[in-house]
Length: 535
Image 1 (spheres, rainbow, N blue to C red):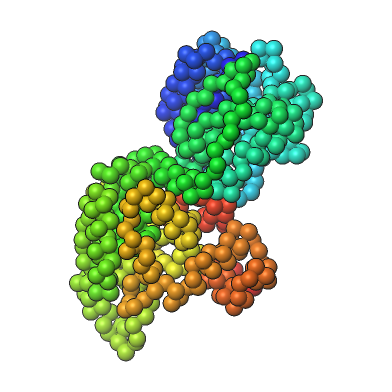
Image 2: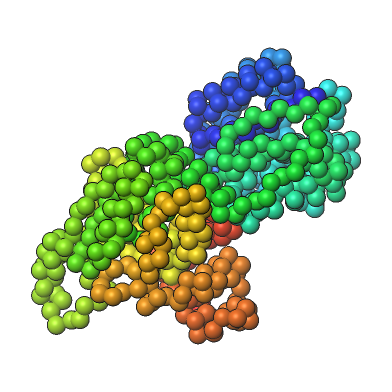
């Protein structure tokens, strides 16, 4: 049996485009002699569809699209994920489903029994679990279907499928990228295949949809747990494997964490822009390392001709920062608009002269500069249709070291789930062949430059310490006492935790941000703003 693994990049509810993509893959698989082509989980409607699944028209169009796909399967079989109606009138009105189609006919439909309900997953909001588990008989083989994480669950349907005679499991997945999961994914799948003593065909979605990036990495693993075929990571791919004459065991390459994060960020930003209709982007370039990294990511995502940098110096901006922004854009080959804000700032201060009379310079005056810059970027976006890519990192967002309607302005945040220490790792990756981000930017002491001689460490702990505490508290949900036992000063731990908790309101108003860690702000970490719990 020849199986084609169709690793596609669907757009949520773009049924016409999705059907075209799916039928093109079917045609290609058939041309390569495949007997069966397998698509990812929810491939028809795209993932995550979120509350669009509560729209009856979306579900109807999804079912019509499935019928259109079925019409294209003459001479080949296909397995594809979609949203099916629950006709029992008990529980939720939908199932997360997979259809087995052969020669233009939907032979059987299989429903997900174990729903994912953690972190960014909220399947129980939309889908009903179906305890009925059945196999597919095709070309003399008994095939079991596992949808999503069912293959990885100890109490999952795989044992039932094996009991029904399945020795080949096909796993339709839509697994989003997070660095920790990505690093161990092949090992985990291999261990499960060996444990169950089954051959595994794992087909994962690829591409970005909102804050989630799907990494692909579809693969075939034999019952010994050996990887015998693997599709590309972070790219669409069609992989055809002959199970009667399988390839020799592959030696998967070493996972390179920083490279994988960079590729995920590029893919996520590219797809967000493309799927939302943006062709160009604009970035505020401060001369600092964060905006330099974001510029590099954006250029790779959208192309050098489609990116513009904007320098907005004030009286507090150092000469070095302005020159560094110019030097960076010259190396990158993008235009730089220089729009000084000192005049605007002075006019604002004149407006507030009576209101602020007798009061010392403080946060209000600092944030005013950031808000002027945010207004300039958004005005350029409105006039020319650019996507404003925000440049703040996770460390800043966590602690509220950012300004509402200022540096939090933007249509999309590229590195808002990237800790500051990882930003420097990305710099090293970007510069691994030649110096793209100038050394003067890398070595500069981080500063918002909103008052004389300001540095980030005036307000925040050193970033290696801060990021360690944030990882323990935000991503690992450790108590303060546990974090202290890791070697951190107790007063620093409690100060950081207080900053995180106090600034939830800012994160609720931040642009959507790409998720690359195991716990990102946004849909994966939903905290109340008005709450009284304190450590």
